[in-house]
Amino acid sequence: MDARAGSAASKAAEPLPERLGLQLAGFERHLAAERGLSPHTVRAYVGDASSLLEHASRCGIGELAELDIAVIRGWLAVQHAAGHARATIARRAATARALTAFAHSRGWLGHDPGPLLGTPKADRPLPQVLAREQMRAVLAAEVIPAGDSEQAAALALRDSAIMELLYASGIRVSELCGLDVGDIDSGRRTARVLGKGGKERVVPIGIPAATAVHRWRHDGRPQLARDAGRALFVGARGGRIDPRIARRVVHARIAAAGSVPDTSPHGLRHTAATHLLEGGADLRSVQEILGHASLATTQIYTHVSIERLVSAYRQAHPRA
Image (cartoon, rainbow, N blue to C red; front, side, top):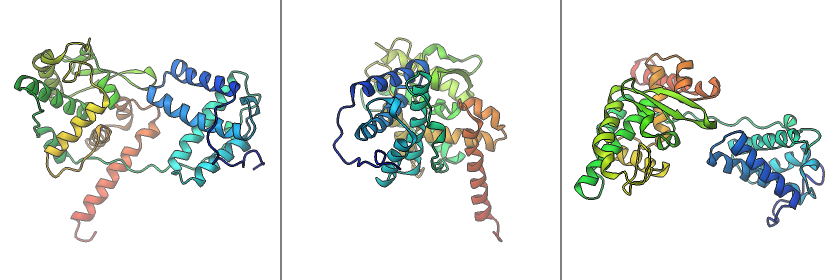
């Protein structure tokens, strides 16, 4: 590592040089407009890229043309010394590769150092999943929201539809909140979902989910919807719900079920995928339902199923 790459990162952050700042803004526009990433993902990428460029600036670099592999490795070494997890460092290395590839494509960087970057393999802990009987208890639990009787009844219908739809489809919480009324086809029992990168897919849903959504749409939503436009799920004030509200619904329903471990909407996504595989669905079909770009992402659920099988064997077999 050269002297520039090893410079201390403990100094107070200073504004980026003008050229670096403009290039960072161009990278942000590229992520949002050209790659179609979600606002949350764009913020994460830009935050990491900003950290890298602040480190580069402290090393005396004023534009991306001067960025090299030693400086990037020095920045990652600082992250490691600060005690960041391997998953965090791996994510930041991925941001560095995306930034240098973008800069090279724009002609700002003569040689792309990104492919030379070796990063630790991120740990992939097995996701928490609920057992089938636990999911039955959660879906059967009743929570009466606060408010007058008509509003409370409408919100209860909404919350039941949210829980049924999350488990039936395995969609992400952001995808659920983005659903419009016309995205649910009750006849075919499908949901049209806009996923990561603006990719649209059609996801099958079961009869209980379709029934719950129908009841909410016809008996609950008219009581609340005022400024929601075509939003399927709305809040108490009539606007489209956000992921924070959906997470609150999930936690409340699980708490009402009693002795069921708490989980998030993403935990219900894990649960849906695991139950599909345990029921005999093939991995490729589960990949399509979940909207994973890579089959390797979906394969973690096969490990979940194996772990559950081993656990059941050890508990049940007399000579385990």
